[in-house]
Length: 501
Image (cartoon, rainbow, N blue to C red; front, side, top):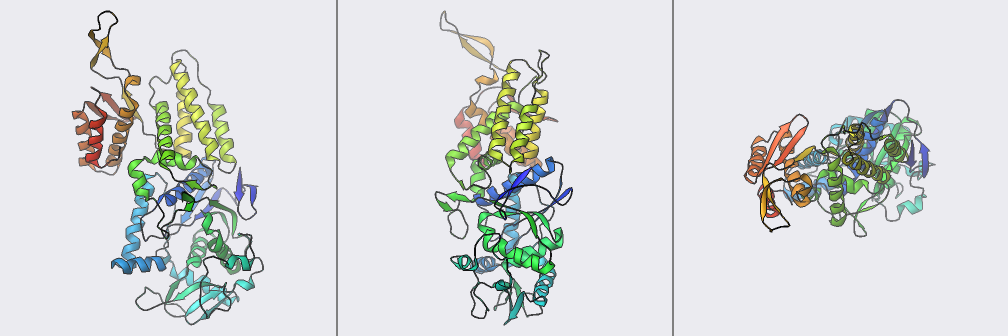
């Protein structure tokens, strides 16, 4: 398996320190709800850690929460709540979004405010070694003392300072020196330290937490492309000079950024699409396919057209697991191993999810064709589910559409009259109807999982009024059409339940 290392700017053979991969990804600053860019980034690293596990590695995954910084303080003051309340609210909102997206939880989510002793330990160690200096209650890192500073971003000191997020302060020895500890201002949250009351700088928290929970050398450190400089560059400087161990990180992985048109999506700029808004209209599977259809290192331009295409892709994939009679009747079996191998080859090549998805759709196509031809597809279905659910994190709920249990008229060529007695095959149920029923059934499944029984029962009862029954079984939810409702009636029901059609 090869991964692209930002440090070397080339693909390298992935050789972790042992069977356990130590992985750290920069987490959220919880002062507002997540936007689509957050969803993109955390889906990407979710798939990466899923594939590492699929590959046979144990993964220890740590993701921090920056629960104190200038933005949190400013927002808390603006709306009149404490920084703790604000951070807690939006941290919970983040977890809700990640659960909706089927993002597996990291092993640890350390918070900056709960790791002050370790942060102080690292800062003091850097002072003792001459890499940092205290002035007027703050502590700064001496960038000029680091000969290889800039090795991650591949820039010299002068170019780094142009337009970058650099701390300003006349008391610093050099303009490029960055803050490790920030002296407190009146009415700001602060903690006691050897240098006075204050709070940690942005970069030091990640060094302290990753060193504490993952050791001196990480296998993977991930984050958005915009974090390469100054954040990750500064992490290297802090961590390697505190421990004396190089490298701090073996493989630096950076995802491209979500864009609105040609501009980066960000909370600070206000140019964003709220993640909750996107997920109210599109399923988690559609969002994942939209994200994974682009290579993780490439920028992703948000568009409704792209999500609509991904939504159609989900419907194509659902056909594979909703098929009856997977064992066939001809005694032949579809060989899915070539597709499995092609999928692995794609993912082994720097997590090439666009190619892996193309293979998955090919497998779906040939599986459906084989099923139509009476060839056994049970092994192919099993392979398909393993790759789509375990690796790509798709939910693909097993919703089975059965032929309707009522009859309709069939037009005769003789007298143009209608003769009752013909069952409606699944293929004659319009896709627009099926997609809405799937959406409603997925919502009900989520409600059951969250123990929202009243809402789940309401959905089932309302669908029954429209002639659609839901039966929960060990293998999934069986959907039976006793009649085919109108698209308008389903849209109305979805509106009542707050689900976007």
